[in-house]
Image (cartoon, rainbow, N blue to C red; front, side, top):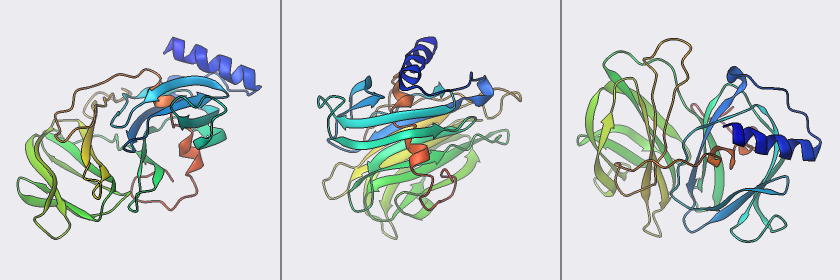
Length: 271
């Protein structure tokens, strides 16, 4: 984290921006899902490379990012700082105190877009875990079944649904809304006590590359004042994805939160 702050300190100073010293309470905890098939990208902040060859299917671990203003530019891998921007945001504010996952994904029509989600880190009743499903795939409405029964119905891109369930293992699959046509799964999902398990359906139904990515955030049954932790994983056709740590990954598209503040809101998305 110290190295990350040093990098950003140099970037901010070079740009002539002013960012107040941050405390833990000022930090935003940011994770990023790269859910755009076939798009390998490089990320720059004020002309300096922060991340190269960021590959589809990567879900980063959370990074504590100091609140402040940042200039970000995303280009095709190898195009350099002066390359055509796939996405960019200048002078964007990263809000403090939030736990956010920014999803770079396809919308329902297959166009690349960004959607920030606020992760629910409220306390969970003893003996239960939280399961959230987010639809960020180029696909029609879907139902998510748990142990063969509909748990979340008629879920559309880019929305989410969530429920607190008794801790245990759930056999989950994704079907086209109102049908038994399985699009993804089935796969076992571990709903752990005091933990939020977030499942992302991403990719393209038309291209036949629908996949899942899983994020976990723990600490919802811990003592007051603790900071919920979390992990990301490589996306897969199942839910047993292995964790991968990208220390600067949370920086990649965090500025997009401010860029999207004016978009219509849905449940628990950034307002």
